[in-house]
Each structure stands twice: as structure tokens, then as C-alpha cells.
Amino acid sequence: QSALTQPPSASGSPGQSVTISCTGTSSDVGSYNYVSWYQQHPGKAPKLMIYEVNKRPSGVPDRFSGSKSGNTASLTVSGLQAEDEADYYCSSYAGSNTVVFGGGTKLTVL
Amino acid sequence: EVQLVESGGGLIQPGRSLRLSCAASGFTFDNYAMHWVRQAPGKGLEWVSSINWNGGTTGYADSVKGRFTISRDNAKNSLYLQMNSLRGEDTALYYCAKGRGFQTFDCWGQGTLVTVSS
Image 1 (cartoon, rainbow over the protein chains, first blue to last red):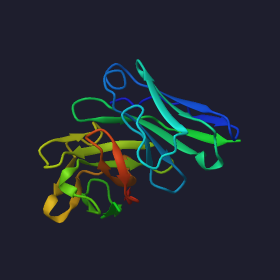
Image 2 (cartoon, chains in turn cyan, blue):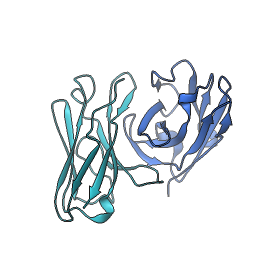
Image 3 (cartoon, rainbow over the protein chains, first blue to last red):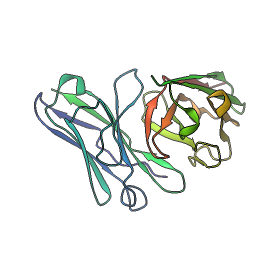
């Protein structure tokens, strides 16, 4: 159960797009279309933003999108807004009823 | 509205046991898998354990396997985490989360803080 790899930080100006990567292995990201992304503001509980690679829960703006290629998943935030500044975590099903998270990426809106 | 309220955290000495609870409301509890996820102070999220709708299937992180036990009482709409042989590295905010399947956490509680220290 090794953590997925995310860049520690990412940034963009308002209105721009930013993409956060999440790299796993053929045992997790590469094997299952069960990648999720969570947004966490300081002092708050995480919020589900993307599930099953590219599906958005009700209420999540369509500025948030997800994709996957091989062992790497990505979250793209388009039309950056100030309120998008937060920590973002990816997770993946890893088989045998286990889940693994990424280390998290701090997104800064410049 | 989905509500998840964790309780049972506190300051506990290494080697001791603690039981966390999560009271669920606003959804049909026994239709969903449930999960525990923790976050050490200033650190990232770590999946801890999951349980399916009827308790027949469970999963554990390697870091807690053999020490923690997840369970649920569907009659009481409650989720539990029995934590034994606690270590300093178990110090974290423990979140209860509702599952979207066994792989996704679609609603989270506010967490209960567990501090393991002598």
C-alpha cells in the first residue's frame, strides 16, 4: 500500500487552467477506474470533487474534470477562482478491499 | 441532509485501546459501505478501514491491520472503529465517511481527534 504520487504544489492565476497529476502503479490507478479527487480547505473536512476517474457529484462545478492515462490520473481545474485555493488529494482503489491516497497538492490561486 | 458525527476521541496512552463511533443520519445507512480515514496533524489523508453494507466485507490499511477493527450496527445507524495497541503514529483526526461503493468517500464527518501520548 504505497501512497500515490502528487506534486506538493501547483498554482495558477484566476481564469487560467491548472492540472494536478496523480501517479500510481499497475496495481492501483492502472488497474481500476476508481480514481477519486477530494478538495480540502484549511480546517475543513474533505469534499468529493471527482469519482470514477471523470464523474462529478451533483453540485461540483464543471470547471473540475478528471482523466486517466495508464498509471497516471489527472485533475484539471479550468477558469480558476479564488475559492479553488485548497489542498487536493487523489485516491484509488488498490484491490483486496483497500484504498490508497496521494500525498496531496496545495493549489494556490495567484 | 447527510450527517456524520464522530465521537470517542481523546488523549490516550500508548498501548491502550479506544473505540470511535460515528452516528449517521439523513440517508439509508444499511444501503452503503462506510469508511474511516485519518489525517495526522499537518499531514495528508490516510485511508484506515472500510466495511460493506452488512459488515460481511472489510478492509484495512497495513498500518492498522491486526490492531484496529471496523464494525457497524445498522439498527443504530452507527459505525465503529475499535483501536487497540495504540501507537504515537496513530495520532490523527479520524474521519467517518459514507461510501459511494467501496472505493469512494462521498460525504465526510468533521472528525474526532485521537492523541496517543504518555
